[in-house]
Image (cartoon, rainbow, N blue to C red; front, side, top):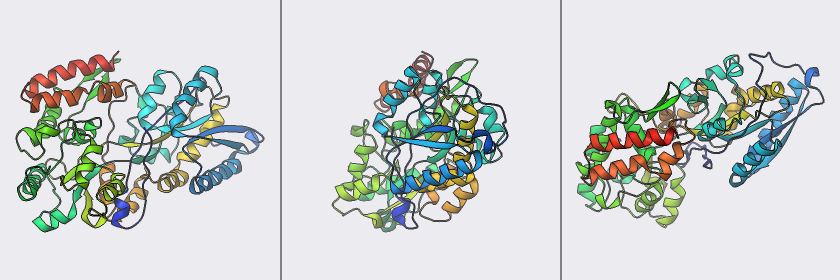
Length: 442
């Protein structure tokens, strides 16, 4: 999926614009040299490295690549040739490269695509490169989940994003509601909104559509649960374990028990919810800043930035933000690269602290280095996103996750069965767990 850019500024509008990411992947054959020292200029003088960037070469992006490539030439003596690949064409380009051997040396892609390309043996194992680089080791371990497959690292995180709760700030002010700090407070706030704004209003909108797990996952992860883990060479579902069950029960109870979201809207996704938000029918929902412009336009300016705000979805006990989905873009070495050692030098430079932080900030993403993230979080408008990103997590790094998550809608179907009274939570999760394991292990 394509990255949604963030506008990084110091106003509420900026915070409202914190978006996330994800897309593509690529690779080839030679393994990188373990823990190779920094290359000297003469060693690679006169050589050329092919680099693929995704998207369009805006002035900001072009300036960034010019500076990065100038530094690369200064330190290695080699040239970097950049090719810009439009996001919609990326999959086709990588597939052709894998089949014909005409791919890049280094490529950008979305972190949720790593597993799929690793399954096709397209990416070089960069584990030793990462372990031997002091700057890359500063990136927190929770941000390497998509890049690490079966204990090996195949890409370096480059920039990230996450989601928070968008809420009607004017309603909160009018009704005397404070941003919730616990699950109980979230339910209380949502019930107050329904009571005062009308039964056709969702106090906290239930997402049961294509991106439902973006909303469900923070509750599951906050309760200590997870979707699946790779154990003994196969994927093992975790849907029947206590942590997952607790988070799933709470999420379905928002509709079935608490009544803060309507039973007639069990298939709505975030796009549908945003439209209802613009129409004054939603008080809170999980999303990113990319919805702000659309809401403002759809409401014809009636719901503008002054009436909207974000807060981190809280952990159950109020200990801080609940983990939310970690989106982002990566940089990786194509395994068919003719010069993996030189490609490794480029990857380390690009994703290192100086250029890694620039890539994120100038590209509208969250920086991965803790001090840079903390600096961004000093802006109150950005704090809900930066706080959440510190504990962000990823979905199972399986090439078949998209089928379970989107195509087969395993958890969406389970949630609807519970809310409609067709299955108990235990029955629904037992059935879903079996289906999830079958899909992930096919």
